[in-house]
Length: 433
Image 1 (spheres, rainbow, N blue to C red):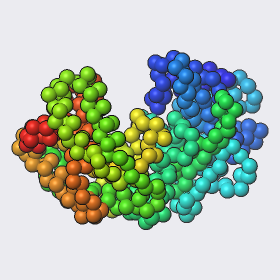
Image 2 (image 1 turned 90 degrees about the horizontal axis):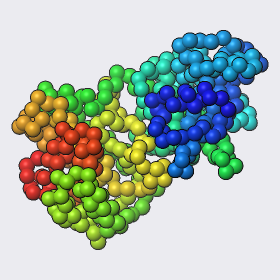
Image 3 (image 1 turned 60 degrees about the vertical axis):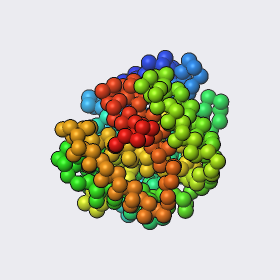
Image 4 (image 1 turned 90 degrees about the vertical axis):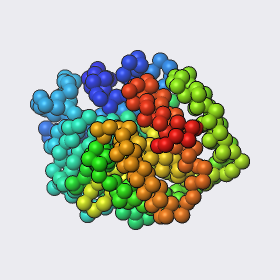
Protein backbone atom coordinates (compact mmCIF):
# COMPACT_ATOMS: atom_id res chain seq x y z
CA UNK A 1 0.00 0.00 0.00
CA UNK A 2 1.36 3.41 -0.92
CA UNK A 3 0.59 6.74 0.76
CA UNK A 4 -0.09 8.27 -2.65
CA UNK A 5 -3.54 6.59 -2.71
CA UNK A 6 -4.60 8.15 0.60
CA UNK A 7 -3.09 11.54 -0.22
CA UNK A 8 -4.96 11.63 -3.51
CA UNK A 9 -8.27 10.56 -1.95
CA UNK A 10 -7.98 13.15 0.83
CA UNK A 11 -7.41 15.93 -1.71
CA UNK A 12 -10.36 14.94 -3.91
CA UNK A 13 -13.63 16.86 -3.89
CA UNK A 14 -15.57 13.58 -4.22
CA UNK A 15 -14.19 12.11 -0.97
CA UNK A 16 -17.03 12.34 1.55
CA UNK A 17 -15.03 11.19 4.60
CA UNK A 18 -12.99 14.32 5.28
CA UNK A 19 -12.57 15.05 8.98
CA UNK A 20 -13.76 11.59 10.11
CA UNK A 21 -10.35 10.12 10.93
CA UNK A 22 -10.55 7.43 8.26
CA UNK A 23 -7.64 5.11 7.50
CA UNK A 24 -6.80 3.40 4.22
CA UNK A 25 -6.95 -0.29 5.13
CA UNK A 26 -6.84 -1.97 1.72
CA UNK A 27 -5.95 -1.22 -1.91
CA UNK A 28 -7.12 -3.80 -4.44
CA UNK A 29 -5.91 -3.35 -8.02
CA UNK A 30 -8.22 -4.82 -10.66
CA UNK A 31 -7.00 -6.24 -13.95
CA UNK A 32 -5.49 -3.86 -16.47
CA UNK A 33 -7.59 -2.10 -19.08
CA UNK A 34 -5.79 -3.44 -22.11
CA UNK A 35 -1.97 -3.88 -22.12
CA UNK A 36 -0.18 -4.34 -18.79
CA UNK A 37 3.15 -2.89 -17.59
CA UNK A 38 5.26 -5.20 -19.71
CA UNK A 39 3.66 -4.13 -22.99
CA UNK A 40 4.50 -0.45 -23.36
CA UNK A 41 4.89 2.94 -21.73
CA UNK A 42 1.32 3.15 -20.38
CA UNK A 43 -0.85 0.79 -18.32
CA UNK A 44 -4.23 1.69 -16.81
CA UNK A 45 -6.36 -0.01 -14.17
CA UNK A 46 -8.98 0.65 -11.49
CA UNK A 47 -7.72 0.39 -7.93
CA UNK A 48 -10.32 -0.03 -5.17
CA UNK A 49 -9.42 1.72 -1.93
CA UNK A 50 -11.09 0.70 1.33
CA UNK A 51 -11.35 3.44 3.98
CA UNK A 52 -12.25 2.43 7.55
CA UNK A 53 -13.48 4.88 10.20
CA UNK A 54 -13.26 4.84 14.02
CA UNK A 55 -17.05 4.40 14.28
CA UNK A 56 -16.84 1.11 12.35
CA UNK A 57 -18.09 2.51 9.06
CA UNK A 58 -16.34 1.35 5.88
CA UNK A 59 -16.34 2.99 2.45
CA UNK A 60 -14.91 1.93 -0.91
CA UNK A 61 -13.53 4.40 -3.45
CA UNK A 62 -12.36 3.89 -7.01
CA UNK A 63 -9.20 5.39 -8.45
CA UNK A 64 -8.54 4.91 -12.16
CA UNK A 65 -4.78 5.19 -12.37
CA UNK A 66 -2.42 5.46 -15.31
CA UNK A 67 1.03 3.99 -14.67
CA UNK A 68 3.70 5.54 -16.91
CA UNK A 69 7.42 5.32 -17.50
CA UNK A 70 7.78 9.11 -17.45
CA UNK A 71 5.89 11.73 -15.42
CA UNK A 72 3.10 13.83 -16.94
CA UNK A 73 2.93 16.90 -14.70
CA UNK A 74 -0.72 17.83 -15.27
CA UNK A 75 -2.02 14.47 -14.01
CA UNK A 76 0.81 13.15 -11.82
CA UNK A 77 -0.15 11.71 -8.42
CA UNK A 78 3.17 10.26 -7.30
CA UNK A 79 6.13 7.98 -7.85
CA UNK A 80 6.11 4.42 -6.49
CA UNK A 81 9.76 3.90 -7.36
CA UNK A 82 8.85 0.39 -8.50
CA UNK A 83 8.94 -1.43 -11.85
CA UNK A 84 9.17 -0.07 -15.35
CA UNK A 85 6.15 2.24 -14.93
CA UNK A 86 6.77 3.94 -11.56
CA UNK A 87 4.89 7.19 -12.18
CA UNK A 88 1.20 7.10 -11.21
CA UNK A 89 -1.34 9.50 -12.72
CA UNK A 90 -5.06 10.26 -12.53
CA UNK A 91 -6.20 8.49 -15.68
CA UNK A 92 -9.54 10.29 -15.78
CA UNK A 93 -7.67 13.50 -16.63
CA UNK A 94 -5.47 11.80 -19.23
CA UNK A 95 -7.15 11.47 -22.68
CA UNK A 96 -4.64 8.87 -23.87
CA UNK A 97 -5.25 6.74 -20.80
CA UNK A 98 -9.04 6.97 -21.10
CA UNK A 99 -8.84 6.06 -24.78
CA UNK A 100 -7.10 2.88 -23.67
CA UNK A 101 -9.88 2.25 -21.13
CA UNK A 102 -12.53 2.72 -23.82
CA UNK A 103 -10.73 0.35 -26.17
CA UNK A 104 -10.56 -2.33 -23.47
CA UNK A 105 -14.26 -1.91 -22.67
CA UNK A 106 -15.17 -2.38 -26.32
CA UNK A 107 -12.99 -5.48 -26.57
CA UNK A 108 -15.52 -8.11 -25.56
CA UNK A 109 -12.86 -10.81 -25.79
CA UNK A 110 -11.10 -9.89 -22.54
CA UNK A 111 -11.96 -13.30 -21.03
CA UNK A 112 -11.79 -13.94 -17.28
CA UNK A 113 -11.14 -10.70 -15.47
CA UNK A 114 -11.86 -8.85 -12.22
CA UNK A 115 -13.91 -6.41 -14.30
CA UNK A 116 -16.36 -6.91 -17.15
CA UNK A 117 -18.28 -4.67 -19.54
CA UNK A 118 -21.92 -4.66 -20.58
CA UNK A 119 -22.51 -2.81 -23.85
CA UNK A 120 -26.14 -1.79 -24.38
CA UNK A 121 -25.61 -0.05 -27.69
CA UNK A 122 -22.46 -1.10 -29.50
CA UNK A 123 -23.31 1.15 -32.43
CA UNK A 124 -23.03 4.31 -30.34
CA UNK A 125 -19.75 3.49 -28.61
CA UNK A 126 -16.71 3.42 -30.91
CA UNK A 127 -13.01 3.22 -30.30
CA UNK A 128 -12.32 6.40 -32.28
CA UNK A 129 -14.27 8.65 -29.88
CA UNK A 130 -11.83 11.15 -28.39
CA UNK A 131 -12.01 11.38 -24.56
CA UNK A 132 -12.35 14.85 -23.03
CA UNK A 133 -12.46 15.41 -19.28
CA UNK A 134 -15.19 17.53 -17.71
CA UNK A 135 -13.32 19.86 -15.37
CA UNK A 136 -16.22 20.71 -13.05
CA UNK A 137 -16.18 19.35 -9.51
CA UNK A 138 -18.72 16.60 -8.92
CA UNK A 139 -19.22 13.54 -6.72
CA UNK A 140 -18.20 11.39 -9.69
CA UNK A 141 -15.89 12.10 -12.63
CA UNK A 142 -17.31 12.66 -16.11
CA UNK A 143 -15.36 12.05 -19.31
CA UNK A 144 -16.90 13.04 -22.64
CA UNK A 145 -16.41 10.56 -25.48
CA UNK A 146 -16.46 12.68 -28.62
CA UNK A 147 -19.88 14.28 -28.95
CA UNK A 148 -21.66 10.93 -28.59
CA UNK A 149 -21.35 9.50 -25.10
CA UNK A 150 -20.61 10.47 -21.52
CA UNK A 151 -18.52 8.16 -19.35
CA UNK A 152 -19.31 8.58 -15.65
CA UNK A 153 -16.58 7.11 -13.41
CA UNK A 154 -18.10 6.29 -10.03
CA UNK A 155 -15.87 7.33 -7.15
CA UNK A 156 -17.66 6.18 -3.98
CA UNK A 157 -18.71 2.63 -4.76
CA UNK A 158 -21.81 0.80 -3.57
CA UNK A 159 -22.10 -2.94 -3.35
CA UNK A 160 -24.49 -4.23 -6.00
CA UNK A 161 -26.03 -2.72 -9.12
CA UNK A 162 -25.94 1.08 -9.39
CA UNK A 163 -29.49 2.46 -9.34
CA UNK A 164 -28.85 5.02 -12.07
CA UNK A 165 -27.76 2.23 -14.42
CA UNK A 166 -30.59 -0.07 -13.37
CA UNK A 167 -33.30 2.54 -13.88
CA UNK A 168 -31.93 3.85 -17.18
CA UNK A 169 -31.72 0.29 -18.48
CA UNK A 170 -35.34 -0.39 -17.46
CA UNK A 171 -36.63 2.89 -18.94
CA UNK A 172 -34.73 2.40 -22.21
CA UNK A 173 -36.20 -1.07 -22.56
CA UNK A 174 -39.66 0.40 -21.95
CA UNK A 175 -39.16 2.97 -24.74
CA UNK A 176 -39.27 6.04 -22.49
CA UNK A 177 -38.16 9.14 -24.43
CA UNK A 178 -37.67 11.40 -21.40
CA UNK A 179 -34.28 9.92 -20.45
CA UNK A 180 -30.90 9.54 -22.14
CA UNK A 181 -29.93 6.30 -23.83
CA UNK A 182 -27.73 4.00 -21.76
CA UNK A 183 -24.73 2.90 -23.81
CA UNK A 184 -23.22 0.45 -21.34
CA UNK A 185 -21.50 -0.02 -18.01
CA UNK A 186 -18.51 -1.66 -16.34
CA UNK A 187 -18.71 -3.76 -13.17
CA UNK A 188 -15.91 -5.14 -11.03
CA UNK A 189 -15.24 -7.70 -8.29
CA UNK A 190 -13.27 -6.96 -5.14
CA UNK A 191 -12.84 -8.44 -1.68
CA UNK A 192 -14.17 -7.07 1.60
CA UNK A 193 -12.13 -7.20 4.80
CA UNK A 194 -14.30 -10.17 5.80
CA UNK A 195 -13.00 -12.07 2.79
CA UNK A 196 -16.31 -11.93 0.92
CA UNK A 197 -16.01 -11.16 -2.79
CA UNK A 198 -18.58 -8.59 -3.93
CA UNK A 199 -19.45 -6.78 -7.15
CA UNK A 200 -19.95 -3.09 -7.78
CA UNK A 201 -20.57 -0.95 -10.84
CA UNK A 202 -17.50 1.12 -11.72
CA UNK A 203 -18.36 3.07 -14.87
CA UNK A 204 -21.53 4.13 -16.66
CA UNK A 205 -21.65 5.21 -20.31
CA UNK A 206 -24.68 7.18 -21.41
CA UNK A 207 -25.88 9.35 -24.27
CA UNK A 208 -24.33 12.82 -24.35
CA UNK A 209 -27.27 15.22 -24.51
CA UNK A 210 -26.44 18.04 -26.92
CA UNK A 211 -27.33 21.67 -26.30
CA UNK A 212 -28.69 20.70 -22.89
CA UNK A 213 -29.50 23.42 -20.36
CA UNK A 214 -29.94 22.84 -16.65
CA UNK A 215 -33.63 22.90 -15.73
CA UNK A 216 -32.97 24.92 -12.60
CA UNK A 217 -31.28 27.67 -14.60
CA UNK A 218 -34.16 27.74 -17.09
CA UNK A 219 -36.80 28.01 -14.38
CA UNK A 220 -34.97 30.68 -12.38
CA UNK A 221 -34.41 32.77 -15.50
CA UNK A 222 -38.07 32.35 -16.48
CA UNK A 223 -39.31 33.52 -13.09
CA UNK A 224 -36.85 36.43 -12.92
CA UNK A 225 -38.02 37.61 -16.36
CA UNK A 226 -41.69 37.20 -15.47
CA UNK A 227 -42.15 34.67 -18.28
CA UNK A 228 -44.76 31.95 -18.32
CA UNK A 229 -43.29 28.54 -17.45
CA UNK A 230 -46.60 26.68 -17.71
CA UNK A 231 -45.86 24.75 -20.90
CA UNK A 232 -42.50 23.61 -19.59
CA UNK A 233 -44.02 22.61 -16.26
CA UNK A 234 -46.76 20.66 -18.02
CA UNK A 235 -44.21 18.79 -20.14
CA UNK A 236 -42.21 17.95 -17.02
CA UNK A 237 -45.38 16.53 -15.49
CA UNK A 238 -45.96 14.37 -18.55
CA UNK A 239 -42.36 13.13 -18.50
CA UNK A 240 -42.56 12.18 -14.83
CA UNK A 241 -45.83 10.30 -15.37
CA UNK A 242 -44.30 8.42 -18.31
CA UNK A 243 -41.32 7.43 -16.16
CA UNK A 244 -43.51 6.33 -13.25
CA UNK A 245 -45.66 4.16 -15.50
CA UNK A 246 -42.61 2.47 -17.01
CA UNK A 247 -41.00 1.85 -13.62
CA UNK A 248 -44.24 0.34 -12.31
CA UNK A 249 -44.35 -2.00 -15.32
CA UNK A 250 -40.70 -3.08 -15.18
CA UNK A 251 -39.62 -2.99 -11.52
CA UNK A 252 -41.13 -4.07 -8.22
CA UNK A 253 -44.39 -2.53 -6.99
CA UNK A 254 -45.88 -2.81 -3.53
CA UNK A 255 -48.08 -1.07 -0.97
CA UNK A 256 -47.11 0.73 2.21
CA UNK A 257 -49.16 1.40 5.31
CA UNK A 258 -50.26 5.01 5.60
CA UNK A 259 -49.91 4.75 9.38
CA UNK A 260 -46.21 3.93 9.03
CA UNK A 261 -45.65 6.87 6.67
CA UNK A 262 -47.51 9.22 9.04
CA UNK A 263 -45.39 8.01 11.98
CA UNK A 264 -42.18 8.80 10.10
CA UNK A 265 -43.42 12.25 9.09
CA UNK A 266 -44.59 13.09 12.62
CA UNK A 267 -41.30 11.93 14.08
CA UNK A 268 -39.47 14.15 11.59
CA UNK A 269 -41.49 17.15 12.78
CA UNK A 270 -40.68 16.44 16.43
CA UNK A 271 -36.95 16.26 15.67
CA UNK A 272 -37.12 19.31 13.39
CA UNK A 273 -38.64 21.53 16.09
CA UNK A 274 -35.51 21.03 18.20
CA UNK A 275 -33.42 22.49 15.37
CA UNK A 276 -35.90 25.08 14.05
CA UNK A 277 -38.11 26.38 16.89
CA UNK A 278 -40.20 28.43 14.41
CA UNK A 279 -41.84 25.13 13.45
CA UNK A 280 -43.32 24.67 16.94
CA UNK A 281 -46.53 26.68 16.36
CA UNK A 282 -47.21 24.56 13.26
CA UNK A 283 -46.58 21.14 14.79
CA UNK A 284 -50.23 20.36 15.52
CA UNK A 285 -51.34 21.50 12.06
CA UNK A 286 -48.65 19.38 10.42
CA UNK A 287 -49.68 16.37 12.50
CA UNK A 288 -53.25 16.74 11.24
CA UNK A 289 -52.01 16.76 7.65
CA UNK A 290 -49.82 13.69 8.14
CA UNK A 291 -52.50 11.82 10.10
CA UNK A 292 -54.79 11.98 7.07
CA UNK A 293 -52.64 9.13 5.72
CA UNK A 294 -53.69 6.80 8.52
CA UNK A 295 -55.97 3.88 7.82
CA UNK A 296 -55.12 3.62 4.11
CA UNK A 297 -52.74 1.57 2.03
CA UNK A 298 -50.60 3.60 -0.38
CA UNK A 299 -49.50 2.35 -3.78
CA UNK A 300 -45.71 2.19 -3.88
CA UNK A 301 -43.10 1.55 -6.57
CA UNK A 302 -39.60 2.56 -7.63
CA UNK A 303 -39.46 6.34 -8.04
CA UNK A 304 -36.80 8.91 -8.88
CA UNK A 305 -36.34 9.64 -5.19
CA UNK A 306 -34.60 13.01 -5.47
CA UNK A 307 -36.65 14.81 -8.08
CA UNK A 308 -36.17 18.55 -8.55
CA UNK A 309 -35.33 21.01 -11.31
CA UNK A 310 -31.60 20.26 -10.98
CA UNK A 311 -32.36 16.70 -12.13
CA UNK A 312 -33.79 17.91 -15.44
CA UNK A 313 -32.26 19.14 -18.67
CA UNK A 314 -33.92 21.16 -21.39
CA UNK A 315 -32.85 20.01 -24.87
CA UNK A 316 -33.98 20.85 -28.43
CA UNK A 317 -35.80 17.47 -28.38
CA UNK A 318 -37.62 18.22 -25.13
CA UNK A 319 -37.06 17.66 -21.42
CA UNK A 320 -34.79 14.90 -20.17
CA UNK A 321 -34.71 13.53 -16.62
CA UNK A 322 -31.34 12.53 -15.14
CA UNK A 323 -29.69 11.04 -12.03
CA UNK A 324 -31.84 8.17 -10.76
CA UNK A 325 -29.61 7.27 -7.80
CA UNK A 326 -32.11 8.67 -5.27
CA UNK A 327 -31.67 10.76 -2.13
CA UNK A 328 -27.89 10.80 -1.49
CA UNK A 329 -28.25 10.74 2.31
CA UNK A 330 -30.11 7.41 2.24
CA UNK A 331 -28.51 3.99 2.05
CA UNK A 332 -28.66 1.93 -1.14
CA UNK A 333 -31.18 -0.39 0.53
CA UNK A 334 -33.45 2.53 1.46
CA UNK A 335 -33.24 4.03 -2.04
CA UNK A 336 -34.38 0.76 -3.62
CA UNK A 337 -37.52 0.52 -1.50
CA UNK A 338 -40.87 1.20 -3.22
CA UNK A 339 -42.32 4.60 -2.33
CA UNK A 340 -45.28 6.76 -3.27
CA UNK A 341 -44.98 8.54 -6.61
CA UNK A 342 -46.31 11.66 -4.91
CA UNK A 343 -42.93 12.07 -3.23
CA UNK A 344 -41.45 12.89 -6.66
CA UNK A 345 -44.34 15.24 -7.48
CA UNK A 346 -43.87 17.06 -4.17
CA UNK A 347 -40.12 17.35 -4.82
CA UNK A 348 -40.70 19.23 -8.07
CA UNK A 349 -43.29 21.53 -6.51
CA UNK A 350 -40.83 22.46 -3.78
CA UNK A 351 -38.22 23.11 -6.49
CA UNK A 352 -40.62 25.49 -8.27
CA UNK A 353 -41.03 27.33 -4.98
CA UNK A 354 -37.27 27.69 -4.60
CA UNK A 355 -36.92 28.94 -8.18
CA UNK A 356 -38.82 32.10 -7.20
CA UNK A 357 -35.81 33.07 -5.07
CA UNK A 358 -34.16 34.18 -8.30
CA UNK A 359 -36.82 36.81 -8.94
CA UNK A 360 -36.23 40.49 -8.18
CA UNK A 361 -38.94 40.27 -5.51
CA UNK A 362 -39.16 36.59 -4.45
CA UNK A 363 -42.26 37.31 -2.38
CA UNK A 364 -43.81 39.66 -4.91
CA UNK A 365 -46.99 39.08 -6.87
CA UNK A 366 -45.17 38.30 -10.12
CA UNK A 367 -43.14 35.51 -8.50
CA UNK A 368 -46.21 34.11 -6.75
CA UNK A 369 -48.18 34.05 -9.99
CA UNK A 370 -45.28 32.33 -11.77
CA UNK A 371 -45.23 29.67 -9.05
CA UNK A 372 -49.01 29.13 -9.07
CA UNK A 373 -49.11 28.69 -12.85
CA UNK A 374 -46.12 26.34 -12.89
CA UNK A 375 -47.52 24.32 -10.00
CA UNK A 376 -51.02 23.99 -11.45
CA UNK A 377 -49.72 23.04 -14.92
CA UNK A 378 -47.32 20.44 -13.56
CA UNK A 379 -49.83 18.71 -11.28
CA UNK A 380 -52.65 18.83 -13.84
CA UNK A 381 -50.43 17.36 -16.57
CA UNK A 382 -49.09 14.67 -14.25
CA UNK A 383 -52.61 13.65 -13.18
CA UNK A 384 -53.86 13.56 -16.76
CA UNK A 385 -50.95 11.43 -17.96
CA UNK A 386 -50.87 9.09 -14.94
CA UNK A 387 -54.55 8.85 -14.10
CA UNK A 388 -53.60 9.24 -10.43
CA UNK A 389 -55.54 11.32 -7.90
CA UNK A 390 -53.50 12.90 -5.10
CA UNK A 391 -56.38 13.35 -2.63
CA UNK A 392 -54.52 14.11 0.64
CA UNK A 393 -51.27 12.45 -0.39
CA UNK A 394 -49.64 15.35 -2.18
CA UNK A 395 -50.28 17.77 0.67
CA UNK A 396 -48.68 15.40 3.18
CA UNK A 397 -45.61 14.70 1.06
CA UNK A 398 -45.12 18.36 0.19
CA UNK A 399 -45.41 19.45 3.82
CA UNK A 400 -42.98 16.71 4.85
CA UNK A 401 -40.46 17.90 2.27
CA UNK A 402 -40.86 21.48 3.50
CA UNK A 403 -40.11 20.38 7.08
CA UNK A 404 -36.88 18.78 5.87
CA UNK A 405 -36.02 22.02 4.02
CA UNK A 406 -36.61 24.19 7.10
CA UNK A 407 -34.06 22.13 9.02
CA UNK A 408 -31.57 22.26 6.15
CA UNK A 409 -31.92 26.02 5.68
CA UNK A 410 -31.70 26.68 9.42
CA UNK A 411 -28.36 24.90 9.48
CA UNK A 412 -26.95 26.14 6.19
CA UNK A 413 -28.80 29.18 4.76
CA UNK A 414 -30.88 30.93 7.44
CA UNK A 415 -31.91 33.67 5.00
CA UNK A 416 -33.77 31.05 2.94
CA UNK A 417 -35.90 29.59 5.74
CA UNK A 418 -38.84 31.72 4.66
CA UNK A 419 -39.17 29.73 1.41
CA UNK A 420 -40.21 26.39 2.97
CA UNK A 421 -41.93 28.14 5.88
CA UNK A 422 -44.32 29.84 3.45
CA UNK A 423 -45.56 26.43 2.31
CA UNK A 424 -45.96 25.19 5.88
CA UNK A 425 -47.91 28.33 6.79
CA UNK A 426 -50.10 27.85 3.72
CA UNK A 427 -51.08 24.34 4.76
CA UNK A 428 -51.40 24.86 8.51
CA UNK A 429 -52.91 28.36 8.50
CA UNK A 430 -54.54 28.41 5.07
CA UNK A 431 -52.39 31.33 3.98
CA UNK A 432 -52.00 32.16 0.31
CA UNK A 433 -49.07 30.53 -1.49
